[in-house]
Length: 105
Image 1 (cartoon, rainbow, N blue to C red):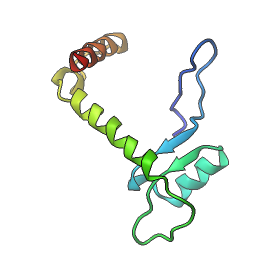
Image 2 (cartoon, rainbow, N blue to C red):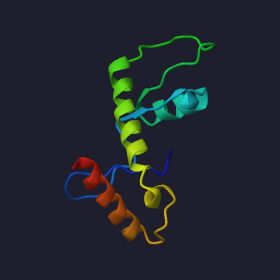
Image 3 (cartoon, rainbow, N blue to C red):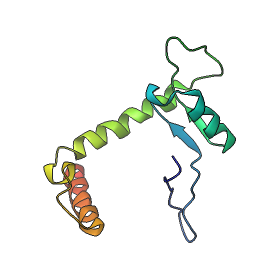
C-alpha cells in the first residue's frame, strides 16, 4: 500500500496518498482500515458477513470498480502483456499502449 503513487496533473512529485481506496472483501481487515484512516485515505470496502456494520457503504462508488476490473481483464487477453515478455519497462508500457489503442478502436 505504501508503494502506490498517483501522478499529478502538471509539475511536481507524484502524490503518495490517494484520495480514496476501493477494494474487495479481501482488504476488509481491521489493520488495513485503521492504516487508511490514519493516513486520511477514504475507503470503500464491503464488510464480510460476520463483521459488524459500522459506517456507510457507498454502492455507486463500489460499482465503478467493476469497470476497472473488466478493462484489466480485456487487456490481459493480449498474451504478450499477460506474460510480460518485455524485459524493459519502456517496452512493456509501449505494448500496453498498443493494446489499449486496439481495444479503443
